Image (tube, rainbow, N blue to C red; front, side):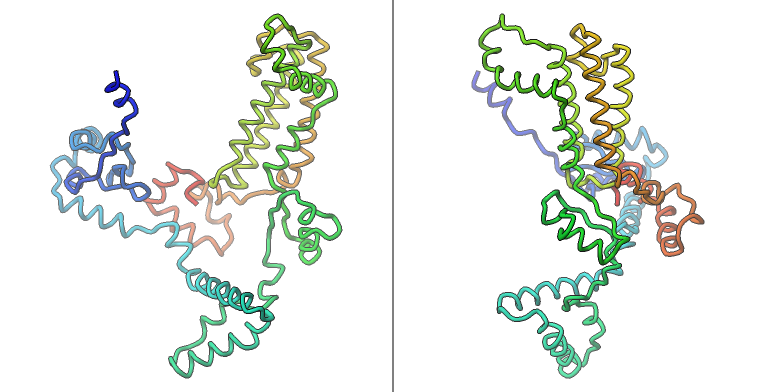
Length: 374
């Protein structure tokens, strides 16, 4: 019995890559070395497939013409794959020097702050001193020094195109809030209120009838569990509340995560608004299939009216709070970089997008990750 319990809780075996797998066209995946990656179809298999037999079967089933290919052929494929153009190499190489300058600026500013000196000493003394040292001692050009911002007004306000913030008064204040002051200096700046915060505010807006029902549930939940015969008035309303809050919780989780972008957030929010509008029509004609718990009860006309009214309030509140998000139009090359017509793209990005559209490795990456490849 103990042996069975130990086997259940035993850690799952993680298979490791072996150099001999290259003979079947496989290398370890760049994002996770525990996964085998096919050099022929750019497919990433599971760790369970990290076996000689399974990798050989993949080669025979999907790439039969390469079954008898020599190891040198797969080595050349591996070398070509490792030298491929990547998103980082295309877009970040030119900014490497600026990034180092920005990092140096931060470190010097930190030293100035620790010494309790006025920040202007960086521009008036430290920067000229470094320039003199480079020219006199090292006999080097101080061109890169110009990319190191140390002054209070290095970044032009018109270069700040957007700013996101939570609902704190110091940020959102209409008179002296940070966003208000930024907007005064740059009227074209896009200001975005935290998407998740606004979604939470919408979920809290409940009509008096539903709020009374919700409070009754909260106060009486222990009594209801203790007494099976206790019947709560408004079972249908309680069921509806359970359903709608479950859907709001799902939406909230979908809006979280490091990989969530403003593009994805907009799609989630306005997709949910469309669902609420459709639900109004369905509930008006007593179609409750989209609401699991509500569908289990007989719902009166009066209850339907309460629910429809609440859905209308939510739609109105969502549209009001996310009106700025609705007005944002993203360029097509952000979501469909492989399909966009280069003639419709500004000259600034045509060259880089042309490289993207003709790079097979990036095409394969886009098929797997879509916009997450950025």
